[in-house]
Image (cartoon, rainbow, N blue to C red):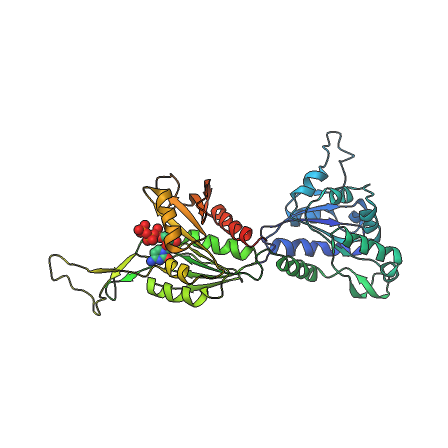
Length: 403
Ligand code: CTP
């Protein structure tokens, strides 16, 4: 999955021949899973039509502050457009547009939007060889960088003038790759390793039967995805679920029993920066696992159960710098029981689910949790989707690491 997936990209197009390549650029952004809006300078419409771009981006295109021919015209809100964007890519950026960005000369909607935008801005210059080399262009590059913009270097090759050299706008594929690499490099949890447990465990009775529970695994999978989207390298140790996860930063380790989960967690915990135990691990397992299928010869059957190892508590015992998060699912004396678990399992944070809260628990897509930290400070949260709770949990890790 591309790091651009779900991102809102505003593409600003200024009037250079390379504007014809922006149709491909919009398609690449859409294919990467981004939402795209386009803002154009009037001059760029000589090189590519707004209709092409609105069709490809599936959004209206803005090229002026209002439509002159329409007497009922509404003002195109550049402030709103600038605030909408997660990133603003100006491609192609002509020498004229860059000079205006530097001086703040907002005589068109692209520059007005640029001045209103609060998101990261990327500039892909395109011009002829000598314009590219001109001291005033170099001056623009320096000032644009000083204002916090990122310049996507132009490429060398044949130019529209027939000359050969530097100044061609980076190819759309290269702009996409540049953005992905740059954004990935700046993700807050980049370089951090996070272990997550998810799902139920199955404790075998005989070769065909087991003791299990109804955990869907969704909470743990959402946490793994939220951590990966913030740049962390995630090991997701999962009991049997119907879920799948597709992210290059997530290594999925499938396990069945609590003993398998214990072993997998201990293999990956030593070099983790944080661990989140969202699995519903069986507390007991059959003491003896029958080698053959148990026949129904008797009118009743006794199964002797023994305690499983508490994986989270075992991680709490050996933890060094790791930020350790556990879950608690309680039905009575919730806060007190959760606090006792923080101590018993040596946790930094516990996420308390109360079954008394409507919308919380197994098989639901929402969760109402209370965070309690190691100083026993309580933070009750609203009813949220599991994705939102996952993000809240990841935000706690980010806060701990001050990123
Ligand atoms: N947990 C674990 N290994 C176990 C049991 C639980 O890692 N064998 C983890 C769960 O993933 C969860 C936390 O411990 O993060 C809380 O588990 P819970 O079942 O609520 O608490 P218990 O310690 O089992 O206590 P009790 O059943 O008495 O409430």
